[in-house]
Amino acid sequence: METQGSVKDVLPDVGNGFRLDENVRNALPAGSQVKNSVVYGTAAWTRAARIIVEVEDGKEVSYFLKCATENQGKLMIEGEFASLSEIAKYNPALAPKPYAHGQFKESQIPTYFILMEFLEINTGAPDPAPFCEQMAALHRDSVSPTGKFGFHITTCHGPHPQNTSWEESWSVFFSRLLRQFFDREIDTNGPNAEYEALFKEFETVIPKILEPLQAEGRYLKPSLIHGDLWEENTGTSLEEGSQPKIFDAAVFYAHNEYDISMWRRDIVRFGRAHTRQYLRYMPPSEPKDQWDDRNRLYAIKFEIAHCIGWPATSEHQRALVTKDMKYLLSKYAD
Image 1 (cartoon, rainbow, N blue to C red):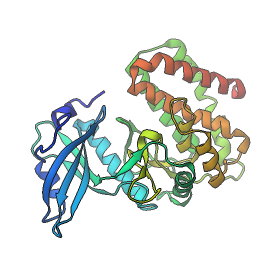
Image 2 (tube, rainbow, N blue to C red):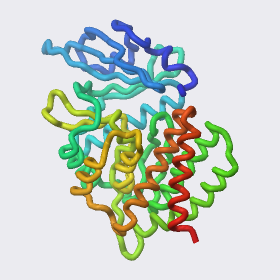
Image 3 (cartoon, rainbow, N blue to C red):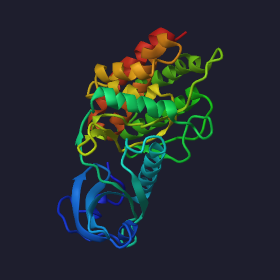
Image 4 (cartoon, rainbow, N blue to C red):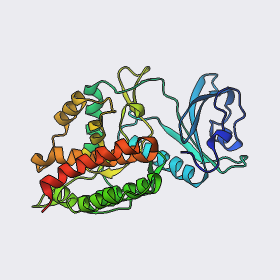
């Protein structure tokens, strides 16, 4: 899946020394000189490059440039800049510093960019202890500016915009988000009457799983979550000891347990050690006896998102979603 005007037309697949757009150059430190620009990897929806500059004191500094095109790319770039900026409020060392974002001046295709700190890292799941301690601290210490669940702008899970409109009820917020992604999955992979009917029935039990979190006088804290927390979006610094790093964030204020539910998926390399370590710092919310059911429920959203991004897997992914929906229906349906 790509934005309408291919991002491949903006940066080459490989190579170095390509010409930087004027607005990107203007976002670099005043008086700096670009020494090289190297395509630094590609993704299905973006292009990225390492920009090496010499600043006024003669020191070489690297920046990470990410680009995406058309309206979809605009949402992705703006959402990522806001996500990194929000994480930096609570733990500046945890994610790359965002420096600037904007639109190319000279591209024939509407092209948007984010310029951020370049990280020297080993990618992959970080050591459970420091990583889970810092993620738990982010969840615990962050404060929703409205006291509600959501975020002030749209963020994107991969290329997919998320409805982050503010909402007091976590059950309502999550139900709305899950329906948004389910509808998008049907649009992407085609209708299936039985599957759609099952999902409609399944929606009736979501409140039974999530409403108890805010019932009987319980307070559920909206926590800043990364939103796409798997090993491809994490790493360990090569320059700051064992400092964990997170990137490609799709934040909003949510139930903190949502952020680790992706680790339940078979294809994700975060394992039980990470989950156990996290729960040492952030024990399950009350009612604790529903923790695993909530974890299963939240993971359904990530299974559906995978199905949208990789349509070739849709038959397998729908089978996984169906299995989990039927399990939860067997426990909670009237």
